[in-house]
Length: 56
Image (cartoon, rainbow, N blue to C red; front, side, top):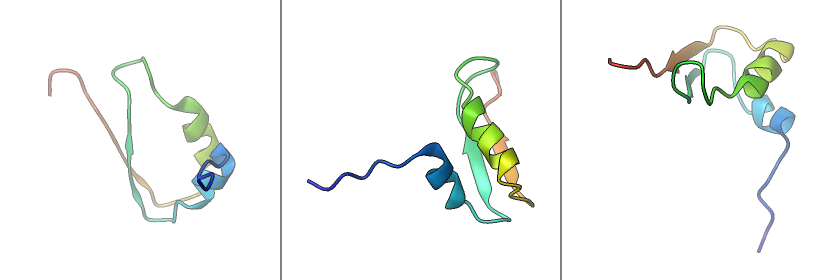
């Protein structure tokens, strides 16, 4: 079976400027902050981010 894993940096490189991204987690818990920091470091712009809000 072929290995389909990649590093976080490799995964973030697949995000194009202007993309719509859904960020998982609930309130302050389970947020993928390492991915968010990597997106900032990669300077990917014009992104729309979606996140869950409790009660909505």
